[in-house]
Image (cartoon, rainbow, N blue to C red; front, side, top):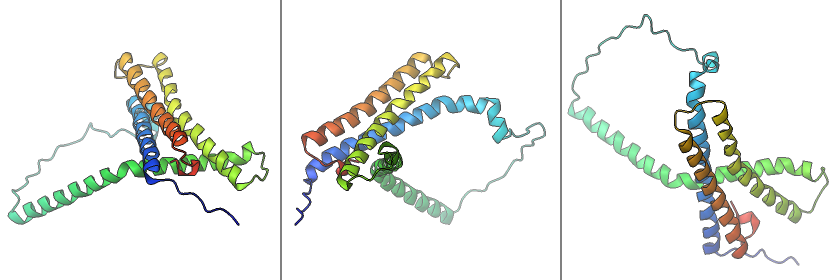
Length: 201
């Protein structure tokens, strides 16, 4: 007779999940920062012209468009649409952190499950051991994704960013530290609170 699976108390799982959500949010901002650093350089490079040709503005002509004043009906429609957009934005922003965390965790699990057969040399292992190895690989992947943007600092030796180098280094290190600390706290509290690895996002 198999023992019933012990459920994790909600408060313990909530603490670990919150730390994971903060870690994934910090990771998202960390990668957005890297994109913000290198995107202007890409747009100014010749590589951009290969994919998106620049428009020819030599013969462009500006046409003046006369717009009449809105009547009350269109004004009411505009206010209603604006209100709907604002409410939808608030709802999306409220659900966004958890959605980002779940998406990041799903991506990490997919990578871990893909790498697992290579690590086990395609040998069959018990389900419990498979879950343990997958959870461990997910942790390694999360920390690798947190440290990988540091490689973007190599660009300081080859190019000039739009921001001072001191700011580039400081912000990059700050995001890296935040992400690493959040994920480290998540696994620390998961160990202290005895939260199973399958409950860690």
